[in-house]
Image 1 (cartoon, rainbow, N blue to C red):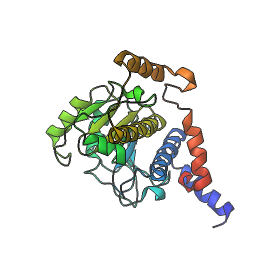
Image 2: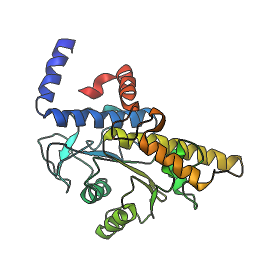
Image 3: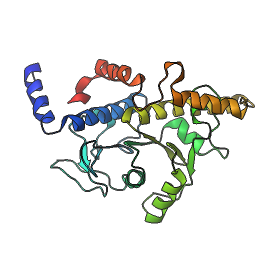
Image 4: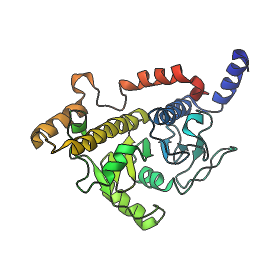
Length: 261
């Protein structure tokens, strides 16, 4: 396919969506590619979902059966809160895997993106009795800000959905015991950023525990640092728009820009 014909195809695909939805599709496709880049995917399973900004009760999700490196902006599937398809598509979704996402989206109107993975170190921490222990500057942003939900099997039961939402409360990160991690965001970028730093902090914890007795600063220092993160201290940025996101998109473009199609 020539560059000219590819441009026509891309324009045709893009014209099916509003500007706001297309931008959300780009961000969500990027998140899937980045999860693959960092090695946090689990074959074709798990999901990142995002609320369509200019439509009520519409969400975007990955097509079931695709590897994360295959996902593009136009291949994402639009569904409603029940997981019903809302547009013609050759793809299907994994309704069982959407259960957690739909419960969170329904309960938390402030949330745009829900991200669930079985990343290696966060999943290891999910099996540790003490749970997550922030040990470094990056990890302190999660001090007293992590929710927990005990493992009950595949989360298909309506009653467990209610318990999961109750356990989550107003927090934006949940450790699913013996399972994985859930991060939330007011944007795809914010949810991804939380995952990146939490996985990094979990790796530090596991390595430190293996090295010997760990040391934390006083609680008030960790809380102070968490609030600095939230307030955007040192140019880090505490809002839904993150400084890291444009750099991450450039990384994807250098690797393979097909995620934009």
